[in-house]
Length: 237
Ligand code: SF4
Ligand code: SF4
Image (tube, rainbow, N blue to C red):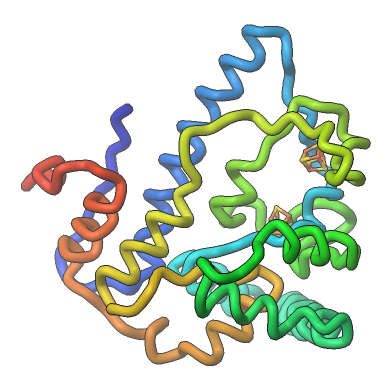
């Protein structure tokens, strides 16, 4: 697959990596959907169908920063309303006793029982703060995990994932993980994935990292290495 990305000169923040990862994800998903269609399995997903938006959605730091940038660029009162929904989600998760377990996800993913956490999270029925009238209000910048999650099973199965009847369109990899590893490569520490519902709180707590910049080529090299692409693929023009 060939995806062209213009890498500007100068310094960029981590969020600058996300559009390239989004485009790559969209290309991979589109190819996977074409295979499904050919085999008589059309996509079930459509606007206004949001049961899946009650799932635990992990996002990498660059994605969280990009979402925060988009949210603070919204006009009022949309910006305050959306930030208020993020605050409400953190409160609801706190009342359900899930915040500590979710924080463990961003600190030590390997030791977290993800399956149990995802099950308990979905059982809460908490809508993603970005969901408005069962549609994604930030659809163009939705996280990689959301872009990758497409199903060909009937939509009603998405309300009962525990039944195991959901047929997700198979895709080779979710790029939020390479983005998390590229971030770790650039700033040190373990790769971090943050639950979308608590992502704005996490961004507040990591404002310094949100503002940090890197030479653009260093930034994109880190992602290419995590994708297994030789850095020489970054042509000099
Ligand atoms: S994953 Fe399920 S709930 Fe989400 S849009 Fe697709 S069919 Fe609807
Ligand atoms: S970001 Fe959008 S697509 Fe993803 S869970 Fe939230 S509302 Fe759904």
